[in-house]
Image (tube, rainbow, N blue to C red; front, side):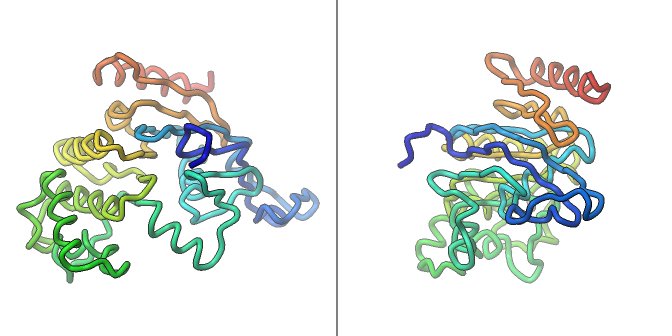
Length: 265
């Protein structure tokens, strides 16, 4: 176990796109053409069991940051550590195993397979990992009950609501007991009732020890978090903790902060 108390550490991460700036192994040379800097020297940590939101205007670098942490993309410079693992050291099978075992993903689209039942969708990572049928049944029923979708397990994705599908996606994300759950605009396609159901599920997972990093543009969604990281123009603009505020108070503070952020203060 590492000495650090953080589960996720992002240290001095920059990401550039364009000729000469595609990977951390290349020096960025302006004479090769236009370089777009999506992230600039971002640093922060996330503690185990923390629910952290990432907010910022469109094009601020939120999704780029999440993609770098998810190992979908790689930083041009800087480092990212999840638990005791430095991501830049991972390649090939080790990288695939890390994604499968240590990261859980929830996207705006639930990405459920319509040919499988909800139970089979949730259990898919376990099936691919060769977990026994008895253990699969135990885990899927336990997590489905925790997230309030146990009555949907025998149905197909097209037979349930959008909120139920997203809760099933959350169940699938945690079924392998990953170190970190990454969510990219998970409530973006949901109505307010379904969004609340999903966020209640996230909060249940957090209370069970899950660590969640969520990108969102919505202040009401962000108000469920313990802390918000604000990004503008690829840079860390500020952070805000919920502390003792209730969700209504935190929501108002987020709205005011986003207004300042977008006005360029």
